[in-house]
Image 1 (spheres, one colour):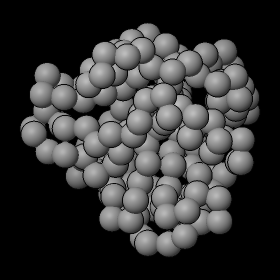
Image 2 (image 1 turned 90 degrees about the vertical axis):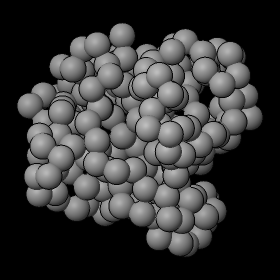
Image 3 (image 1 turned 45 degrees about the vertical axis):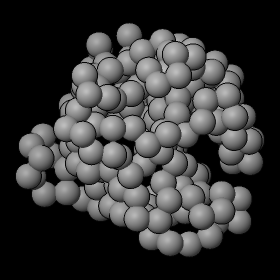
Image 4 (image 1 turned 45 degrees about the horizontal axis):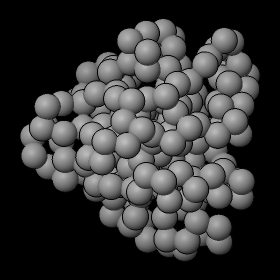
Length: 184
C-alpha cells in the first residue's frame, strides 16, 4: 500500500488533483487525476476519455507497472483473464466528498471489468441494480480492499456515500481510489 500511495503522489505531482465540473455545471466533490494512455474527464461537453488533460493540455502520466500488474492479477483472480487496462482514474476523497450512483459506460468494450482499489480512510460503497432507483447493498471498503465487477454486473449503478472524517496513518485525512478500466 505504501508503494501505491507513493505512486499516486508522484502522479499528482505531474498532474495535480482537480475538482471537475459536470456537464450540468456542478463541481464534483471528489478531486481527480489520471494515469495511463487515456484519462477520464468531464466538462461542459460531457464525459469522455482523452489522451491529455482537457484543462492543461498535458498528456496523462504513464501508468506505473505496479498499478498495471495489480489490476491484471486481481482481474484474473476474479475470472477476467486478459484484462489490459489503458486508463486509471485516481479519485481523492476528503471528508464529506461522495460519488452519486452512476454507471461506468463510457468505455468502448463493456465486457471488460472494472477494478477498484481503496486506500486510506474507509468508505461505504453502494452497489445497486440496473436502474438508479433500485435498492443498493452497502459495503464498507477499508484500506487495501479491492472490488472487481464485470460480466452481467458491469452496468450496475454504484457510488460512495459521503466520507466520514478521520485520519489514516498512511493517507492522512483522505481516501484514495484507483479505478482501472479498458477504455479503448
